[in-house]
Length: 162
Image 1 (cartoon, rainbow, N blue to C red):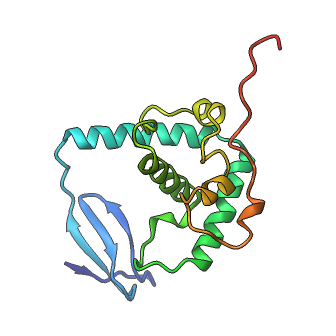
Image 2 (cartoon, rainbow, N blue to C red):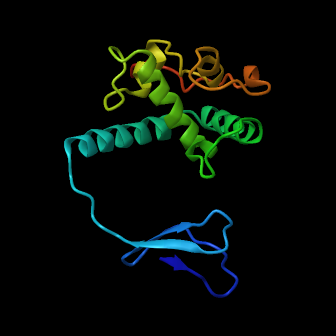
């Protein structure tokens, strides 16, 4: 059902009570449907485990690496033409997830996103160690001045007492 909002709100995206809202293309109203709890499947469990693990890896990454992802995300948004109105890769985390899934596609025998750790990425010098490496490996599209986005995800952990 099409919903028109009051008080100057053009469109709304999200969930309130038992309704799920999505903006219409011109953003003058929202489409609403009833929220239904999804059926639990094995694929949902795998997808949830991957999402949980990627969030941990992302939050363990160095601040400079996260900042490079943000710079890349802005350049991606400005330069890359997308077909969809709502592109999930407009954020630094969206870019990170896209990069990690592309890495898994490039090497499915080695990369298990539900178990990969920051230490695995660093010690194996993977193509997602820096944003620059990911672009050069073809995991992310080329944007202007991507070469300067070379902050590594982090440094290897030193043993205690080193």
